[in-house]
Length: 183
Image 1: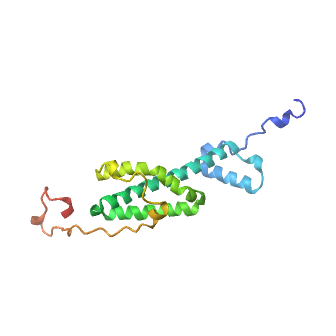
Image 2: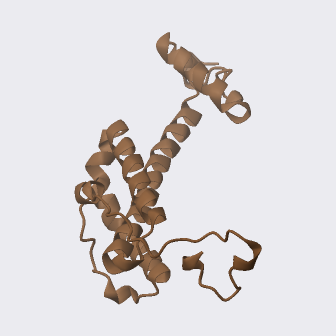
Image 3: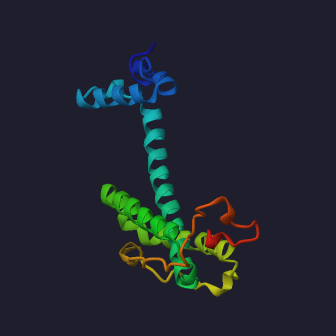
């Protein structure tokens, strides 16, 4: 081989390259070890690039998904507050908590959160329209909330819709036609 050609030939692939397909956790540990020791030749560069790229896409997708769920529920509360349930309140609080966690742990996503929410809003409207049975055109064309406002929203307590009644004797078993809200 002419002098200098040896530099153009790839050295042996890193032993961790096949590990990427077999055991992701062990592969990550091998990449961390190579970086910590400064042994860049042991890095599985192609798979490391793929992994890190997929990770950023996954994190953005998770934030977008959680924003859609939160926006759907905020729309439902705004347009059908009389139907507010503990389940809606729980969903709002859970999504707010998870979104805060993502934004705090990945500040770059926090800086993009309003743009991500704006792109998520049409999906939120479509879902809210389906769930509320209201026409999509009845919802605002753009989100009425910034991410900060959506995270600050404190849902009210649901209004009690009558006391639930548990039959105390067999004779008090409710009929099939009794509305579920009264059970």
